[in-house]
Length: 199
Image (cartoon, rainbow, N blue to C red):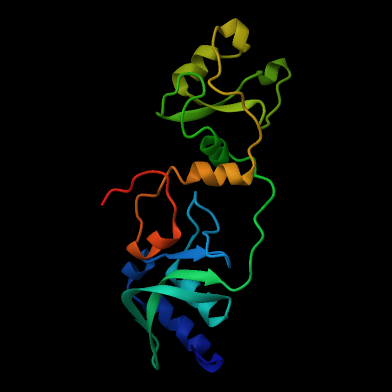
């Protein structure tokens, strides 16, 4: 652990480190040893992880082989850190484009396509439809164009699933089905993916 007198010097040294070290993110676990989030996976840049260790906000659980140095000390870069104080999960899911696509599992709610997605108002805004969890769905461009400004009945289309506001637990469960492209081996004991991981 760095003493506080060397903090400024150590932070200056960070800036001079090789650029490739920014590619060593730390998996951040809550105090119950579960990831803060699955999708996106709760990762911090290595600089933030070391800063949090210095500020005694986290404990290091696992480390990379790579090392960063100040003039007086060398540190292995943390690959897994756990918060010392439990962060209570949010009780509601923010209504964002990303979360909407996640709720709909990244597929069109009309045809099931997983191509380039946009979103569609089930009841068009021109007919009084509002922008809400219950009225907006992920849709591929062809389905969006086909439905246009019409109701489901007039377009002859149907929804695969009725849209509704998701709860955080549900979003975590869906997120576990979409592992990110890069998973460091030191993270695996703390992740419970439903999808099979490629070696």
